[in-house]
Amino acid sequence: MKKIPFLFTAFFVPLVACAQGNPGPYIDKDIFNICAAIVVMALLLGFLLTFSRLFLDYRIKTRLSDSGLPTEVISTLLPEDKNSSKTAALKWAVILAGIGLACTLIYFTLPLGIHSLAILACCLSASFAVYYIILLKMKK
Image 1 (cartoon, rainbow, N blue to C red):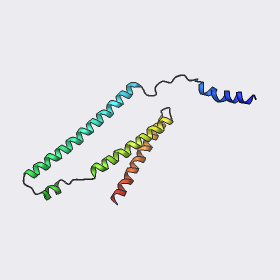
Image 2: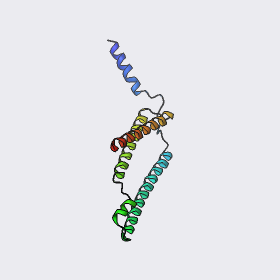
Image 3: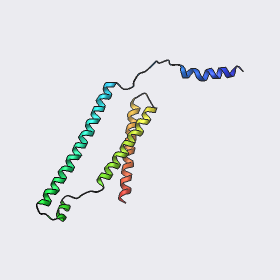
Image 4: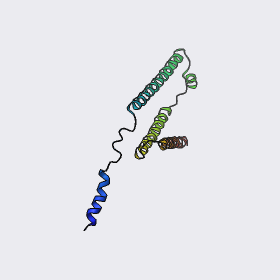
């Protein structure tokens, strides 16, 4: 009879005990804002570079076609890679999935430390390996 209240106490007391207090946020707000600004700028610049490349390719093709060159010559000078957009989307999907897996694993192994960087590096290398294997299977 005395064992049940003791087990109850032994089970529930650690759930309400907070010896360390409230640790607060793990990442400083200023550091998070700087990292978010860098990521947004990288995405914006990547979009602008891709858009300008596509626009300039279109201008080159129209000028070559307006100059009277046959379409066979234009297609040999500027080959279109139809799979490039598909492989780019696949690459980003696999890399972002690896980063998501890394962030999930880092969350479950808090506090942040050197092991967090190791987890991130391993997940990113695994995602690049998966992308490489997928590319090899697509070529066959």
